[in-house]
Image (cartoon, rainbow, N blue to C red; front, side, top):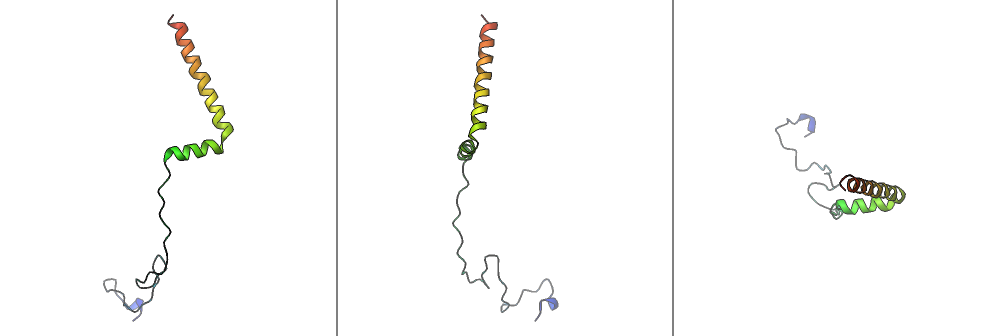
Length: 80
């Protein structure tokens, strides 16, 4: 029986050998699935990015430190 003659409500014939998503035929699993690794944490990704872009990270750290010191010294001057 060909698929073109089947109606949408009829089940497919059992002897039709169609590969599934993992490459197996009719339920026989011959493909080995890769182990699922957990997604890396946000901190791990941030650290990896900092190591990769070392100069930019140091530049931004220096700007942040200088800006914070400027704000604290400015507040100390205004509130004396």
